[in-house]
Image (cartoon, rainbow, N blue to C red):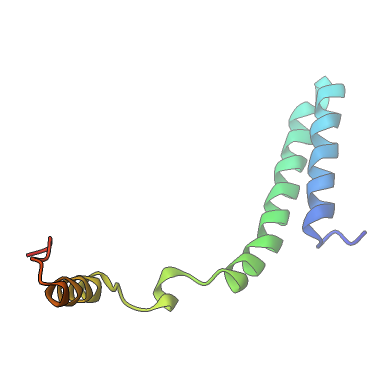
Amino acid sequence: MPMNDPIGCRDMELLCRQRATLDIRHSWKWLGEAERWKDLAHSETAPRFRAEHAGPMTMGPNTSESDRRTMRKASQLEGEKSPLE
């Protein structure tokens, strides 16, 4: 299993955390290694997440003003006063 794979990194993190509970004298070392694997998994996952999940700025401007105009027009067509006026 390649270690640039997030799942492999998570497995190594878990293994190090388990080792820290068994090797009390060197638990600081194993917990440090676990953090290193956790950071590596995060660095491998983050670019994929950003590529798949576009941020809010890519979706366009806030349309709340256009929603108000649409509600006004709809209520005017029905002959009612808009709740936004």
